[in-house]
Image: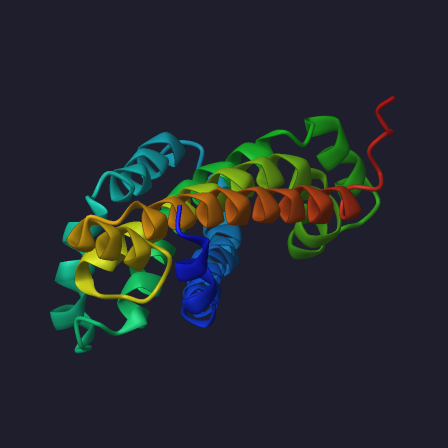
Length: 214
């Protein structure tokens, strides 16, 4: 392990870390904002709900590298444009979170929904003030999976030249030099842990109604 190399490359490594963080978080946020209304709509179609969720699930099976390569001509962007990575990971996050949102809404009991209706809540009002807040713990669990998965998948984008921690892997392989590879692995693990802790914290802050566990 060459710590002198790490110190000399610290500015570049920090920049790659920031890019990795950006490319991991932004797609999850966009994916969640899209998945919430879509999940609500799908949940209101019980006869085709399972089929639609399975259809969205197929999006997650598309190989990431293939998607990174296919998107530039579709989006009219350059192969090195980070927007390709953002869009690809948004597709994956959306595919994963639609099911999560549906599961979260399913966790709300029928009695709770009936009580809200009896109190005069309109459908949209009930969704935002009753159903969605109660679904937060389940959605938070899905967010943890999506965020950690993105931290891992982003590294693949190094093969198309997108700047992030995966660039350290390709550099290390090309130079037969382990230090950047180890640094990339360690920083990816730390980033995944920190983002996971952040999601858990936010989920708990939005779930004060839950009884505290001893």
